[in-house]
Length: 119
Image 1 (spheres, rainbow, N blue to C red):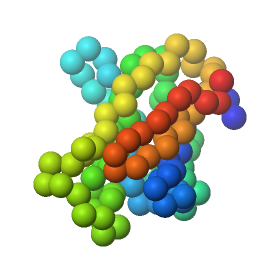
Image 2: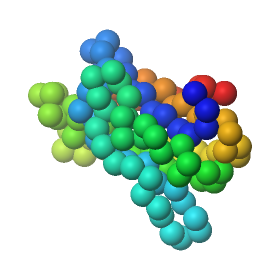
Image 3: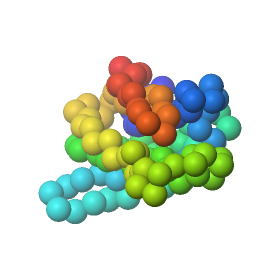
């Protein structure tokens, strides 16, 4: 895999991919935001809407926004009115257009882990 960004999300509370989780990816340029893609995590755990968008993922600052509370509520989980994780905003940077930046999120309603994979 050359260049671009990919996002993979696993719901570690259930031990399965977070199929249906809503995700947005935006590129930040000062006060401006460019929507790269928006969609839902598929059955393979990936944000499929990112496929084929490597040319739009140039070096810069990005935000991945994951709708965590909505995802768990849709699965019947009782969360407080003010959830611990509502919309998770993960800001990261890319510096080399030719490199691939893979973000593997491990998620529960109470925590998250992510690192850069695919170097």
